[in-house]
Length: 304
Image (cartoon, rainbow, N blue to C red; front, side):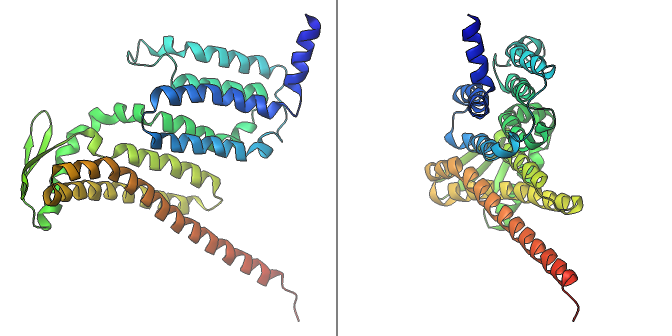
């Protein structure tokens, strides 16, 4: 028995095996959450990217010292306790899943404390933030929905005004739902504008990615804030354009085509804006870095 335990201990403590064990232990419950709660394949993209980022950081992560003997039991205790988080959440959130994002957050924190010194958490901030924040996006969206829903009629009024500028007349009805009604060449079209149409989740996901990218960049805080404001406002206005495009498609091509466009355009707009925004940001950063190197070279150049 002691021989078996010693063998297991030597396998677990082996420098060669530690990364494999760590990533396997981190990915197993993560895969369970994805299987249970993510219905559309696109929704897996950001959490999966975060795990790839965690893999890329392997050398930096495992350059940190191993957790102390006093810290390891605390990390293991957090991992075990993570499976009982449901019982603390259930009285406050009756719809809470038995094993969800809250459980995984406690679990992954315990896993890091089991493997590494506390300072290693800094290296892991970006991937961990992406995983936890992305998987929590729908929960946070549901949390703010009651507070922002009263402003939906104002947003709808703006959208109706925009399509009015394009020569399309629409009327709005307010009841249990805000309805946009149009008389099109194909007949009458009624579109219910609900919380999901606002595009809050896409703004939230964009903000999550933005936090990670700006955290990794060494530029000034003022620069980060300006780019963050520009990116979030851009995402907000693109969501308005997204709804306008859906209404235009309904008007000119009919409800069926409009329904198909409505299904895919959110993903298209989201990916397009992320690509354009971060391409512009990376070009700006490359230009600034080149300028800094030129200034350093001119400063270090020998006098003739």
